[in-house]
Image (cartoon, rainbow, N blue to C red; front, side, top):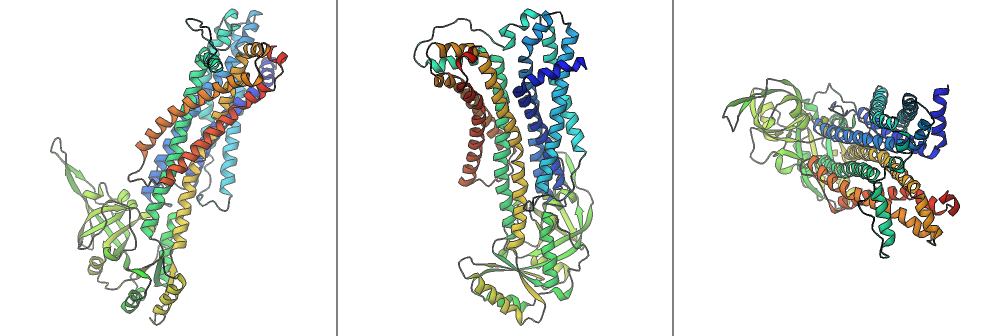
Length: 617
């Protein structure tokens, strides 16, 4: 008990500093654990998508983004751990120098250090696991949150605990060894205790900008601590910029892809069973169950041509989009490419096959505008198809240089599109081509696009009248509700990623607070002398405040610069960036910087209230 009594008592004696260290490390562990749990819960994973939510293309995009943010958050955690251990050792070096002067051997001093490090690390990692699990549990039980679909993978908790525990030990052992080897004279010296360095020449201050010069001189004297805090905060701002800017832009871009593919103000007209099945296919994007056994080619589902003609004559309907959806057996056709350097022939593809959803679309009257790599179907296309991104990733190696076979007919792949229908497991054909191949001359899905300037209720009433005399079980269904659900799912997914850096932001703010406390401690006597010779408390607090602002502004500049470059490098193709997007990103980053500065001013406010005698003690 005696070996652990002193380290525990020493930690309790510095309650504020110990609490800051534990809080910083706790938030780092919690943010990493929450990222892993969240990615697992929505069925995406941090490395590869499962395919039961989103599309495989969007799932992999999200996985790559969260993976990058996760690595960056772990790097921030490593830098943060290193800085906090440095501060902890700095505040204890003089005490242990006195202990060694009293005859305490090096091994026992190192044991005290290691015991403190183990206690702080174990407590921080345990609390971080609890906070991460609690945050995940809280979000998963919010009724308005759309993203959760899978149970939490609790195996992430011990993995994250061990990873950060080892990380803290690795970064903490070297300062421990250095501190235990210091001689008593060096240990009690302010140069070692505060990490101070002296300039080559001491210059006399002039009266102009005296407060600013005193502040900058103190920053220079604490060069080691200043450089560390600037590196830490710069890394934090890189993480903030990437996660906030990247998430906002990715959310707007992917939402645009999904919305454009489904169309806006679109109404579905189909047989009741077919309409219900298509709704399930759309809802598969958010993890809804599908009806795997469904006979799409049933003649009962055919929409009479008379109904289509009546719909085309209704004022207020912009487009009438007739489609044919079926289940067909697809075969991959291998191809080859030519290496431009060696002119060697490189085989591409295999002979994969399977049953897939196919849809015939009239390009001229289509209500959707898909985001496509390559191009979408055009008027006059006959032997061409466009495949969904999930099909492209699972059944083809390089789809844009390959072909496919359906019912012994070969079709060239001219594009890969993002479509929420059936999680992107769909192939689009020209409508007339699919009807010719299958021998089915009718359509089983009708989409009509409504004009936004007409009375919606009047047009819907006319549509219902047009199908009443059709003699079939046709129903009218507005797709906006399903599209809104898909968009809300995307919004909640990307918005949750934006929560992650705020764990780290709080940790960085606490680090800035700890740095300000170290600065005040190192300048205590100097600030006391300034007060004694007539300086106002406002002047003294301004000196310390200027130091915090200089550190924060320089870190913010570096972090935002490198963060912006990194964000541009990892963005998806054709990002949707509007003036509102830029304004939203700016406001988020400004609020984060302002919040960090406010927390960093807490020691400055406390300094202003400190009596003169206590300040000079």
